[in-house]
Amino acid sequence: MKKLINCGIIAASVIAMPLSAQTYISNFVDGPITDRPIRILQTNSAGDDVYVFDPSTMEQVGYIEDLPHNHGATVHADGTHYYFTNEHENTVDVVNTRTFEVEKRIPLANGPHNLSASMSARKVYVAIIAEPLIQVIDMDTNEIIANIETGGGVHNTFVTPDGLYAVGGMIGASEIIAIDTRTDEVKFEMSIPYSQNPFTGGVRPLTFTVNEDGSTRSMLVNVGGWHGFWEFDWETQELMNKISPPEGSWDRMDQTADGIQSAPSHGVVVLPDQSQVWHSSRATSHIYGYSFPDYEYLGRVYIGNPAWITTTPDSKYLWVGVSGHNETAVVDIEKQEVIKRFPVGQAPKRIFTAIMPADWEGEAP
Image 1 (cartoon, rainbow, N blue to C red):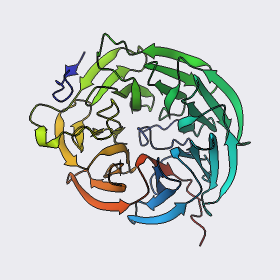
Image 2 (image 1 turned 90 degrees about the vertical axis):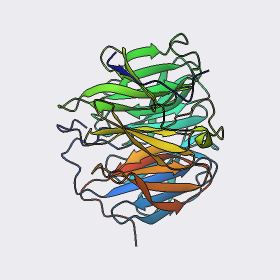
Image 3 (image 1 turned 30 degrees about the horizontal axis):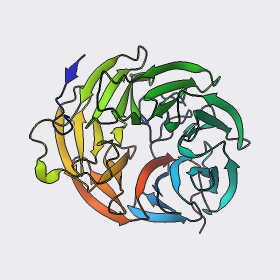
Image 4 (image 1 turned 60 degrees about the vertical axis):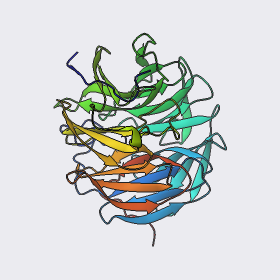
């Protein structure tokens, strides 16, 4: 393995350049993403609404109602609709991006968690937590076209930045499955053995790094019980690195047990320019940054019970769901400080950067 940083707190689409090289940004196949309209979607896990922000103006531009216990979010390849998992109705809810109205509810086999989309395949991959299953939705018909069996209930799905693979992570089974989005056939399945991490609480959020040609290089995985993330080689699935904040980057006054749920880190993001990686720390209420690919520690920013993290395509800002404070925080990466906080709904966790097509008309007046 290349490098290990000791864990101190938990001890007992093909794009030529990697402009969308992290999981919470939608991938596109028709050129660069500069100058496209961008929207940040903040879901509220204990509420029934979603907040929509324009990061270019740092303003809220939309509000979506009637989405009880919404979990994950993504966007249609044509920018016409948002997709949200609805844990109350066991559906994927299809929302018009201009009017914010729910236009369809797609029934699922059972209770969902996260979802993710491949823009090149024009498919949405839905994690079913209540059954060992990933369900696939065709964007052109908004109908389920495939049911992919898994080793356990699926907590999250994420699509690689090139759009070629959908990856599911499981908590109870502590497994990862990778699916070819062109055929919906399984590319590989792997487990995180208890022997590697006796405190494992399964697979939590994950993201990807990319090679110069845009292909997937590695997976960065929040592993239950680990303060930070692990890196796995994409082609071999071999463990490359275990990254955690260094000694001296936290103290006893930072520690909290609020909402950890056996996952001290529950959010990880790679900047689109591939220069840095940041992860959340429920255990210390901060987010932590590292250079990439060297994983040199860069510093931390106080957030207050951070959940998921997303980034703007220019690699200048992080947007963070602050679940304990019912806020969305915006972090200036260069300054390493919070520059704005927005009040949102109840228990905001999943947050998503939607990159819209260049000709998208925006919200209805």
